[in-house]
Amino acid sequence: MKQLIVTDRDNNAEFHLNVGDEVTLRLKVIPGTGYSWKITGFEEELLSANREPVFQKSGSQLIGGEEQQVFYFRVKSSGVGQLKFDYLRNWEKPGTALKSFTITVIAEE
Image (cartoon, rainbow, N blue to C red; front, side, top):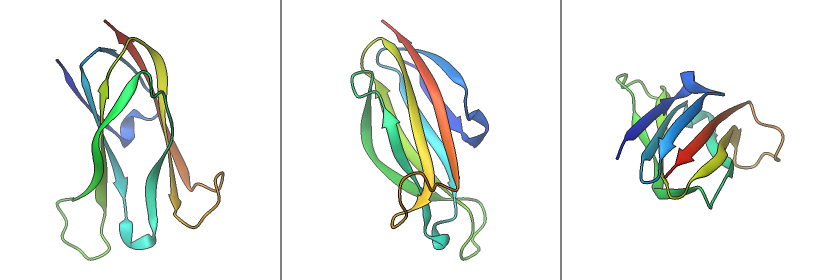
């Protein structure tokens, strides 16, 4: 079993994984602004969320500073699919995201 760590630098990347592998996404966020990452699409037959997303502080202890929003997934079947996220505020309408993040997962048995 492999554990893949994905960051902001991997936007639009493609990853080859095996069933049972884990994917951890660490996306930069400034929670004091009201913005956070929301999952806008993923293939439920291909991936499952391992646990609830969490916020982790970065090295800086500044109030209102940058943190990471961390998402956990496991590959549960073979196939091809995308994980899509939008960076927006909870009260904003879909399609108004400040930025987006997407990766493609290609999974094999």
